[in-house]
Image 1 (tube, helix red, strand yellow):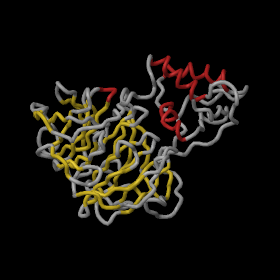
Image 2 (cartoon, one colour):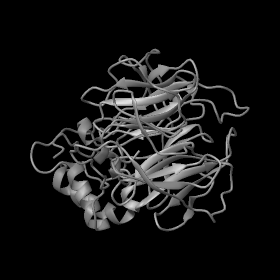
Image 3 (spheres, rainbow, N blue to C red):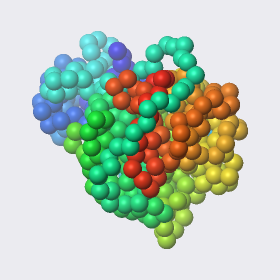
Image 4 (cartoon, rainbow, N blue to C red):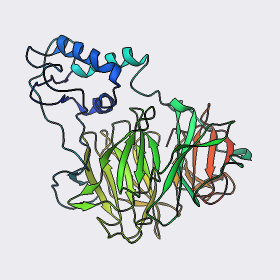
Length: 407
């Protein structure tokens, strides 16, 4: 239980302060439907002191997470000593009132209200890797999918599996241009369909609060999409007074942190912003620089034990850095494997390079999934279906013998 829940101040919007381990729950509050608002009023009646209730002028519920590029602070840094700047588009949360020592916190009560209003849990059910041990990865039957679907653009990338939708999501976009692009949904056994036209995004990941995280070249930002409404909010767009460039790939950590790469592939004729770099948004919503890179950073992936982040840097190959117990970077980048476009992992910790090679956690090639493309991710009912995007052709699926977590 999130015991450090704050209360509601009538002079401010709903602001909830609690421990970082509750950050995903806090973000979920920001996506409550209209039907849950009335129950939120009852929550504050039960948990807040008189005069500090949601129905006394606050106007509705809001998330306390920072979302975007307000005031900037800090100096440039590298992994292990990352620096921070508030993200794009909003202001960070602040304390409201004082914490109550009795009864449920506002966060817990609010999410119970959401459950009652929506008929289910606010937090997404997300696949967890079984304990293992696992056999060496072996590729089985392969088949082309979405063969009759008419893609509008010339490049496919950024796939992820979304358990709540029982589908793969990926981007179809105009290569080397600032836009446009569509987000495509593929349900195994069915066809591809356009989930969101003109999204302007590339890499996708599913967060632990159930939102679809997208890094977007058109808006030069990191967005979170509500899967039910398709509405988005900006998580980051600026760092130290400079715009992001062409955010390319992204992965979400269970702490609520979001790691992404920022090359300039689809920048077009627009002026350069912060330049090639690797970033993460921490659970509080602050944008942190992990490292500036000498060339373009590309694909990114998180090990299943969440202790390592793999990132491809053009010309230097796939690099790796470590995370501490809170999910924050704790080392510099070091060499791991050869070059790639996109990266993903399986439950054994093997890394799948977009070209077709499967690399063990020790950095040795131990298998292949055949012809590669821009990126391949695991998903499906048993999480053993490898969805391979051919950058400029139809996708295909490959049946593997080792499951993998969502990208």
